[in-house]
Length: 181
Image: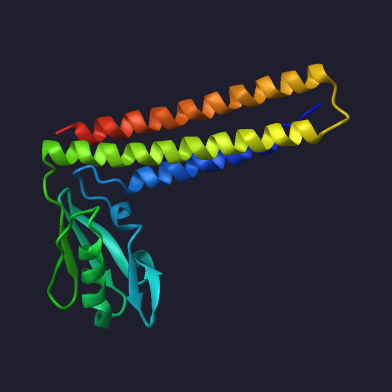
């Protein structure tokens, strides 16, 4: 019998990565994960922002970034400003960086949904790759009979559909959150 536990685990990892990517997508409300993808050049190397500063939510429209080392304040502000996908303009007072989250226009909301849909496609491609790897493994397995191979192939297809549906549900939820004013 062909075991699909490993394939299920790989597909769950794809969906979890996708959910993490969706957390980074801007929704109009301040959320520390919005800045999760930002890399800051400090001490001669690039480091994730959360390793050089503490990110907190002051209110629904303001993030406060407190650097662990105040000498890095300008590098952190520049890194946040340089991320064009976020479109944020931080200000600093020498101790902390305030990142106001401007209200999203309808046009900007649609653009964010469009960018998020590209991440959906990437997740679905990754799921299809897992499915293809499983099919190749089945073809190589010579000890399996044809009927067992067909059943296993059907099981893999159902698994792929299940995880595609999870990706679609997560995207639908995020799209509604983005488009809600």
